[in-house]
Length: 326
Image (cartoon, rainbow, N blue to C red; front, side, top):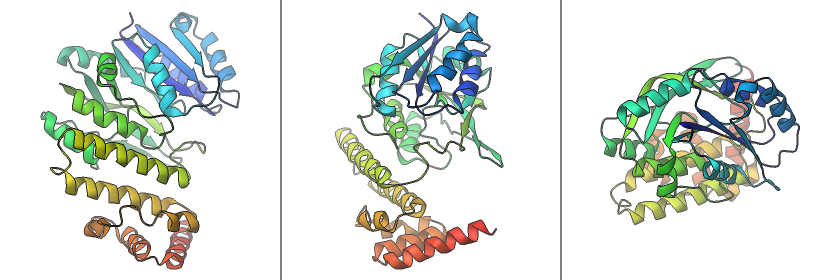
């Protein structure tokens, strides 16, 4: 049984899968299992992956490739990988990203030293013109960690890919995201993992390179799907909180977090019609938290709240013009 399993969904990443796979195969840690899930990718990603595997014959026997017969989305691809994994710990990697060579060695060492269920590291946000180091806060208090990931503060990442997770925790906690939930899928899973974990440890270093250059990524080009995913995510989260007796305890924090989600979408979506269609989302309490946002976000939220959609559209066009001419 391997010590660590890499879990990698593959879909429409022809330009990136080679770099990703090489970074995984060049790990300084040997006892690794690699599981690639072909989610019925329409391009030549799998051919490019197989070409890289041939370049690492010492790793070839550690590789499993699972082929979906139809595209089922990120949540199902991750579930397929988790259920197929045999490692003590698992690491999720998006196939358009890459990692540093010592990631597994250092994170697994910390997991063993601390007997941790989850090990967290910092990460790099990679933009076309700059690279930003991002911290992921871990507190000695498990209660504080759970509240932080629940409300998704600025120093806490709800992402799976900068974390090493005990596989049995994932299975026993039954934290799988529902089929069809892609945007917010990580946050759905990580919140539940934090509530199930007994110990979370931290490596004070960044190994993961999260790329912002893939035009096919689910986080780009906000549209109807993103609003629908946010609605489903918060319905499931409200049920989760109610089931744990936490709904009222964290009500204000959750309302602020919901409003933050809405503001992000209404600012980033390009469609007048979509912005109008989802204006109702969290409308009953959003103005209580308008002070939390930057001026441009406050203006956009105000305009949408009071159904001034034409003004919101013009304001959006003005912001884009200013950004293009900076």
